[in-house]
Amino acid sequence: MEQVGKKKLGLFTMTMLVVSSSIGSGIFDISYNLADTASPGAALVAWGIVFVGILMLCLSLINLLNKRPDLTGIFAYAEEGFGPLGGFISGWGYWLSAWLGNIAFATVMMIAVATFFPALGDTGTSWPSILIASVVMWLLTLLVNRGVESAAVLNAVISVCKIVPLLLFIIVAFTAFKGGIFTSGFWSNFASNTGSLTAGFDGASVFSQISGSLMVLLWVFVGIEGAAMMSGRAESKAIAGKATIFGLIGLIVIYLLISMLPYGIMSSAQIVDLGEPSVAQMFNYLVGPVGAAFVEIAFVVSVVGCWLSWTMLPAETTMLMAERNLLPKKFGEVNGHGAPTFSLVFMTILSQVFILTLHFTDSAYQFAFSLCTAAIFISWFFVTVYQIQYTLKHKEEKGYVGNLIIGILGTIFFLFCMIVAGWNYILLCFLLYIIGFFFYASARKSAGIEKVFNTKEWIAVAVISIGGIVGILYYVLVTMASAA
Image (tube, rainbow, N blue to C red; front, top):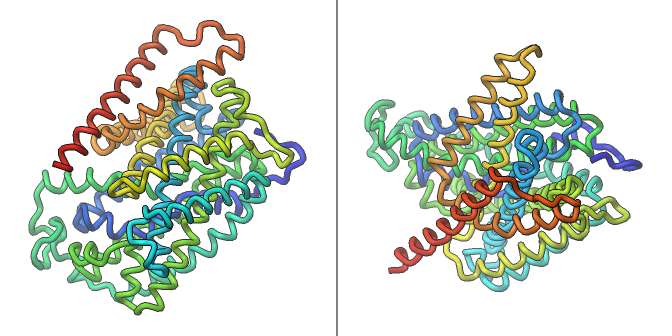
């Protein structure tokens, strides 16, 4: 969306938007969550798979930004390739992902704050914690409502502040790294110290570890599409494309080092025993309480910065969808600062309701970030599928074979993730689509479209709705079984 009279965002600000949208709570706790699931060998294999998949997504986004500069918003590719319902499904999934991610931020931020104020409890879901998180959430909403571009510039400053302690942790962890510890139980989580790279290898176990790691690793990349989503506010589409690739390079280096170096300092079991957030706990182990407090503060800043990004992105999504008659026009109304007030308030109210329910939920952080990651799989999947579709229609363009391979590999990767790692969370997300379909139908009718759904679209709506009902029944049964 072109914002006339508004200052456009340059390469640095757009790159920092990508970095800050991705670096949030996940990176500070990735050692704990990864060590709880995978051995060093399985974690490295999982990282290799995830890197290829995310790279295919980024290359698809860059190609489409260059080839289709007329399309703005990640959902626009699904709409172009699969019609208005496809665009809605992609956009609604992205919107769900963004505000569900904010719920995860609220929870884990309060866990960190409780380090300094123990009365808040250690789960992030006590009533005082919920009250503080709610106040922060509404303040961020008011900030974005004062102007998206100004919030993006502030976001760039926050990004720099939170990268510095992460780099410091990498330096300290690197000096403490020992190869013998890293190779112990290389393929088996909690195995005895064999010091062998091959001992304990079991194909089925390694595959289980890899698949179990995918949601953890992909969670830290949610936001990588931030530049593409905000490309209408960039100086050019080319700037958005460059920001995406620069952001990916920086992120993969930081993520890989922070997640893997702890394996060379202590065993997987010891990393898990340290507790959360693992980077701060590891810092406490290496340099003492002062270092841990420094990282805890940086952690809170990091979460707030990412939370700010993800307050901008879902509001931008619903605004653009309203312009395309995929949501009611009310979602597209902007104030004098160019910010979509109704979209912001609507999202924040839903987030507030969800945050209140966390008081009664176990493992609230893991549940929220898993739902968030599953929801965005849908949007990412549509991008790579459209990459294939566009490439097949333009065989005469340079790089045809390479672009086709990029789309195919990306599509296979996200299908694998949805089926192997996130199918139960995908079904739960489908439940929230049922609400969205009513908004979609209202928008289409208001636009003068009498036949909202054709036969194929009715089938898609029915499948998604049934999937949502199955998902909630499965979740209830699992919850009851766990309680028993």
